[in-house]
Structures are given as C-alpha cells and as structure tokens.
Length: 136
Image 1 (tube, rainbow, N blue to C red):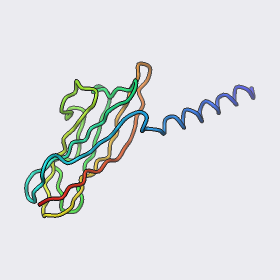
Image 2: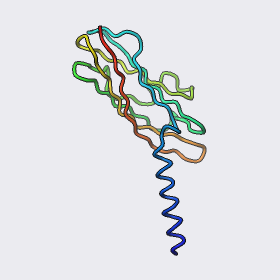
Image 3: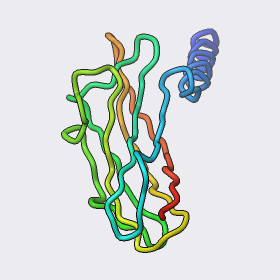
C-alpha cells in the first residue's frame, strides 16, 4: 500500500510540474496591425501556435475576453472559435478590433481559455495577453 501511495504522489507531482511549462506547448503573440489613429478602428492579431504534438482544435471550447485600457473601446468583448481567421491552419488567429478615443498609448487585454490536444487527451489552459499601441 505504501508503494502505491508513493508512486501516486510521484506521478501527480511530475504531471503538475510538466503541465505548468506552457512555453514548451505553445507560443502566444498579440500584436497591433498597422497604424492606429484616435477615433478610428484599429486591430490587434492574437495568435496561438501549438508546439510538438499539441493541436488547437476548433471543436473544443475557446474563449477570449477582451478589455481595453482607459479610453479604448473593443468592438466586442467575447471571441470564440467561430472568430478564427483561418481554422484550417495549425496556428489559430483572431483579430480583435478596437477604437481609441484619444491619441497616445493604449492597450487591449485578452483573457484566454482554450484547449490543447494530443491524440490521447485534451487539456484546458488559461493565459493573458496584452496588445500595446500608440494612437496618432
């Protein structure tokens, strides 16, 4: 019985350590597209690129909750897998549109929940990303 408990604890600890290293599982970028002008629509591209045997499927839940910094209004607050630019590519991208009220620095923040899958299992991940810009 002690042996079983020992191996259970050992396996659980190694799984927890492995699951925390998201840099080995995916890359996440969130960057402004083109120039941004105050009072006009701008856009940021958020891209998740799975690594190794991981895939980001369009059949598993994906949610991006978007908020702008002060004076920045997102076109919408919630994005799903239906908003992927091209769902057939390995990297998945959404374009988040926003409008800055005034000139100067601003940020569009994304709070993400998504699943990465292998042939055997899918696992949920959470991440935060920020797209900084300077409106003219």
